[in-house]
Image (cartoon, rainbow, N blue to C red; front, side, top):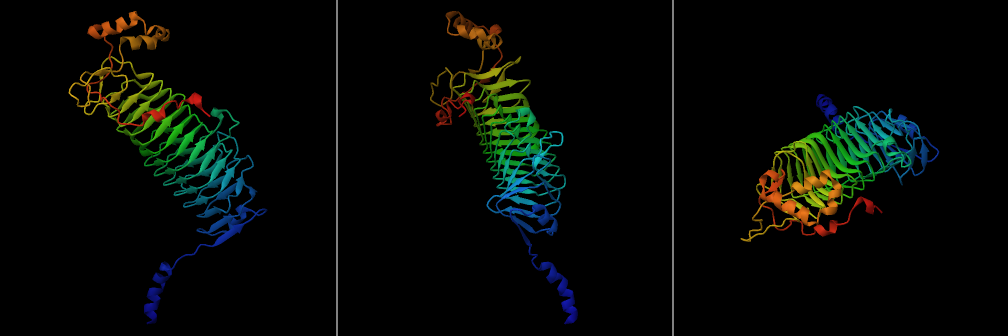
Length: 422
């Protein structure tokens, strides 16, 4: 019997729950002292108050704010620096990092190897970078409010969330503004970005060299650019809203093998800016009330563009190339300025839609020509160009344009322009 207990005792000890100790910190006390005294796995509870400290977390801990205490970095260095795995920061106000761009001062800095860090329901205010996350797996940033140093010039601010060389990030439900780029993603893969609001920054999000990521149900508005995907592949960009940006809503630059579907792109200077993009699918998007609906350039070919609605853009599509590009080969797209007809009632136009002609190209090169667009001479030139192939300009051609839009409530997106910023 004694030998049996000796054999079972180690197994019973391993199966026993390990209870985390809790440490409480109040105003006038040191959070760092509690962190240093705690054992790995413990919980440090911080009462409401203002604490001027630069915290260093080197062990697995949970730091939990009670009634949202403020931790100020005193305008020096990183306010909180995490170098251990499985650290959770929750319900904190984190503020006043330093301002050294070369040192990447941040409200919260997640250092290489600090895998599975979680930041949840925190406010990060007046930090150079909100969060700087480098070389970690599975970080999570959820339901947090991030604003930058608003009195700094845009180029001198850091990014709201910067991911570098990460894998499996989950960036969900955050509100980020008044930073350089709200979310900057570089060499980071298998990430999810969902339900974020990104506004009043240079780019809502800025992707570089990142693969297999999901961008879903986000709002990017009142930025210079909404969503910028550059030198990436295997992205899913679905059910987002990019509106009121002063340059582009969604930029697809040097991108392959990606799906861009069911997004609303409204009230931007350029809805889509597509440059050097191949083998992508653009499907079910609403492109409405932009100055230019789509700017297509630099060998953007072999893309599948189907069932999109292009409505009330001042220029539906700007395309300069040496040959036609076929869109809507299978299902067609809707173009609000289509002047054709549907004799058999199948919902598809009987003649092809051509996005631009010789007159369009001349107006792009000589903008003052727009003053003459209604003149008989220009209308005659447009008619002659259609009759004589030698004068015809290469265009995006949709051979079976849809007569009705798929998005029946498209009119609610009219007038959402950058100059209407409240």
